[in-house]
Length: 312
Image (tube, rainbow, N blue to C red; front, side, top):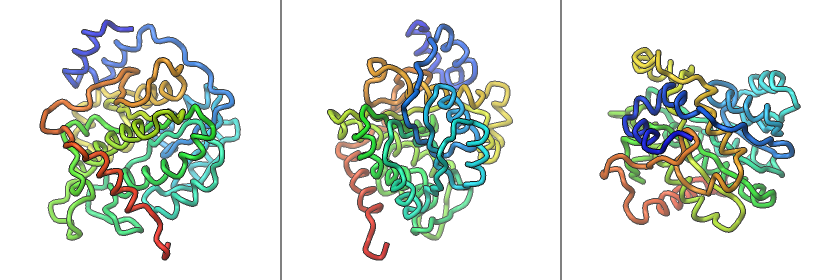
């Protein structure tokens, strides 16, 4: 592995560490990954970009894949491309009823990869009435994970891998603000809403690691660096043009996802925010640190908002 001082310097400087340069330097000497034969892996958002690259990497290691997709037609096309008869299950993370229906179809599971996410450029609400970014990136992800915990525990050792973003470094957790702006949509910023939800994902991942200690289920969050994906081109075209020459490929961005799914347990203790196969700081500024009790408050809020009512 790369000498730690050099690795840390790449990370601290941000651009070199997040770019394809950081990947190229760090990946020298990485060992081949263990096989995943006999392991069932579910992944959200697998039909494009980083998710598709992760699905391809997992399939190459022999994993039995469950593709959780909004668009079943795209899911079936990917399944045919991957071979090995992956299961395709329709799952719209912005719709809690869809999430519950999808989870009910999964009995055996070893690894859950929470990869799907959205960055709308205008204020919108979900089928359940929540701001769309929060509904998809936080509530849907939370509801799916909680619903699949029994399957993960029953098949232990199990792993939860949540794909966050380096953009979360600029935001602290505000349990109220993470739900989005007022329903008028005034002053809505898609980038800010996205970054807030990505911070929330990291906090929830750590909270799962704490709550699941001793169950045989581990929880990790990670970020892929700066990756050239259709989503980036659409949501941040200016940034994509500026950084185009140094953007990572989707395969490079997906590497740590696949590695966290396959690495020996001794190499991946539960918890932490991972990038390029190592844990990274979760904060770069003092002002972004959570206040005591914030993680539990976020967990409790998500539990309340995703618990079905009688009408559901």
